[in-house]
Image (cartoon, rainbow, N blue to C red; front, side, top):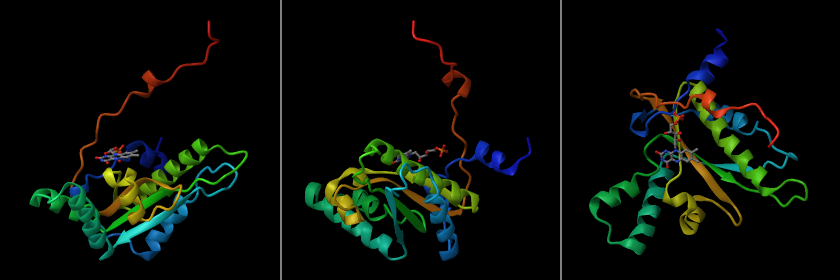
Amino acid sequence: MNDPVIAFLRTRKSALLPTLGEPGPDAGQIGIMLEIAARVPDHGVLAPWRFTLYRGEARIAVGEALAAIQDRRNGPLDPVSRKKELGRFSRAPLVVGIVSAPKDDPKVPQWEQFLSAGAAAMNVVHAATALGFGANWVTGWYAEDGEAARMLGAGEGERFVGFVHVGALRGETPDRPRPDWRSLVSDWAPVA
Ligand SMILES: Cc1cc2nc3c(=O)[nH]c(=O)nc-3n(C[C@H](O)[C@H](O)[C@H](O)COP(=O)(O)O)c2cc1C
């Protein structure tokens, strides 16, 4: 089958963070990425997700805030650890934070809303890759840490499903082994 969309979906892979460089997506490309991110299955049309962009100088400020949190809790940080925290959001020109923002709804369980946020994150990866960029969805200690997540922009009842790092491809990433789907599927049969 020669369909380009199918070929894309069959071969997509993440790019290792050190292979991401300048330039990142421009404003128009970011708009396309987020338009695609918001086009995901969403039971009840609740839009139980939103996006935070980290770019330019803001990435430095975020790194400094993460280092400050770690310094206060576990410091003084050794130079290697400090450098790691300072650079967390500077490994690519653009980081898209995907925030799960579930709504109170009598018909739509929160579980379904979390899944929809995951789908939105995956669509950010797909859109960035389809635009020719490298992308990698990562979390990190700060995704689940209350203080850090608040600093990063999560509000009450919200949670980061991840941070998709996006940049120009500046190196090769070997593919990882993929599970054989045949070993993961069976036809339903009645339980004995
Ligand atoms: C929710 C979620 C969180 C992830 N967090 C990390 C992470 O913190 N660090 C990491 O190296 N990979 C992380 N990954 C894996 C990468 O996003 C990526 O899927 C993997 O490196 C390569 O898979 P791919 O080539 O199929 O995209 C995470 C994946 C998911 C779904």
